[in-house]
Length: 389
Image 1: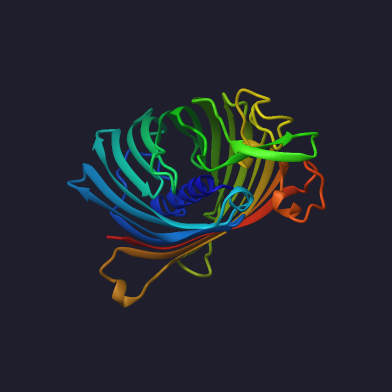
Image 2: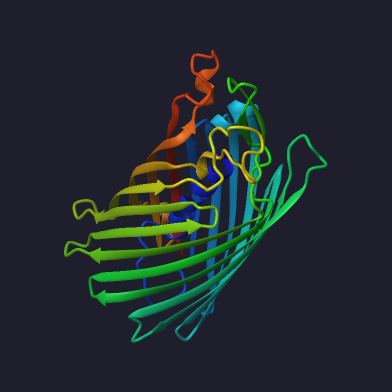
């Protein structure tokens, strides 16, 4: 997984844990509770190490408005297969600031948000707006959202290099209470990306001469990418207070990438230990390659566009994870309504079907194009304290 993909992957986990907690089951139009989260996150896999803190604070005003602020840091150390093949290890820091507000009017919640993210060779600004509306006796919730992002891309060591891209994301979802124990959610999302969409450091390789040697050049992507994703999620509440959740998501884009994700998640509060909640989950992902992906081009300029990003190749992954949440009852925490300590851990295994490990061929024991296929494992950890007040 490259640096950007790893950061986005870890970021999604942090949002699911620190922002929403282990259990987020409310379907009525209510504002989020006053809450603060202090989190440490870590991703370690494929030669990339990412870790750092995140602090999220949310406060309600007059029971009509909920405002929040989030500070998030990634300390990135990179020696991934892409770096080791065509570059050198690096260390950098990414800082992200987010602010936003939710406004409650009758059965409607309007949400607004802004995020700024900075690192030495990349700057992003993101604006978000969303609406959710309850109807049919609060048994149904319709949500609509739009996100716009602007990115400025640089290249370390090249002060003259500057490129731009932007992203427009539209989403719609319907959550329905089917029975008192069964909640179903349908979601659709479409994304349009435009501008400089490839990594300024990554290279593709191609055969030269009589086909026994190879050279490399920078990737070249189309300047637009459109994608669509659809998902269905169901949560069933079991008689003994536990819950079982199943997710399915399908994805396709104009690059020719298609993917399917399946996830099963079980959450179990322990009666024997008050305040202790356990969670287990498994997730699989299958993806096909982009139309212009190639591990090895037959010659330079063999196609109009060319990429060797392993995240655009054909691959599968499987993820196993668990979570523990425990409510703390110490006297020195009596100023808070509730305090929990939470640990989330995931182990992910990636297997690539047509991306080869060039670092295994440093001594020339494999012919070009016959290097072993690449695979790696990653560990993702989120440890955080949550305070309700």
